[in-house]
Length: 102
Image (cartoon, rainbow, N blue to C red):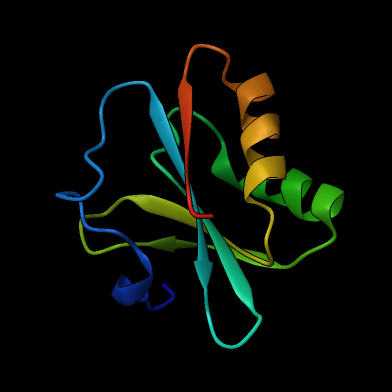
């Protein structure tokens, strides 16, 4: 598995996960580089197909990593938070999609 950069993710104390919530975060990497992460996607959903479709649609690179607690997290290069939020709202209409970032 890939190493997961814990500095890039807000702690659960800052943003507590609730049922039916997916968190999208936009974070500054270095300089003008951005990283967009998506957390709390349901385990029953095929995250690999979702990642492939989003990478193709957004023309960016990305990977799926596992954090220390065993949760799967999608990391995508670039500032795609709002676009990903809109797409996830179409795919998961029963879920609340929360966006963190500016």
